[in-house]
Length: 288
Image (cartoon, helix red, strand yellow):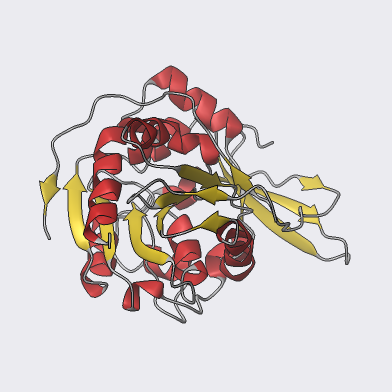
């Protein structure tokens, strides 16, 4: 785990965890704070949705884990939606999409895919050939076109302060080559990632964060399901990871129905009801 000594590279041994099937995780704890006012601009066991309700499949992004969806899951379950929160390996869009597809294969019936941050890259690829995915919801997320990378998109407009907050960790892979995992420094985590989340909760998130492979942010997308499936986007105007201008550009290009909110990158934690509302709007619009 990274400490708060930013910029210092540490060498660890071992291998990056391999992608495996059965990565579905269900999280049911309550979390989150009150919603703000948005501005609208536009295998076994198998899981099955209830009558008339699709299953909501949630994909977290970098520097987070499945628990980042806890508040959203609670809201969706209260409203009768079946939910699966998938574990994202954070190794690269192609391999992570393959892992997500193993989850989707175990979800019967119609599905709505929801991606946060880098998770948007993953759902865009995983959903391309799945007719049961009826809609896509991007939450402070990337909507890359084929050939684009998360790193390239982030820098398309100014405003991201993420590079200065990162703690890179160098490790040796099984083949003897080295690679880099990226964490957010714990002493910078709340300011960078979760400024509107209570300090104690943000500290827990910082300690539990999952690193992303630097190579994942440099890997080109090969699929864009938003070109053929209806999409929704939550744009966070106080985001220090993915500038709002970048989010707006991608949402406009995808013709996504967009909701803007003055929130940090961790909008699913700070505004779970708002995020759940957008997801449920997508579910209703694609029903039937």
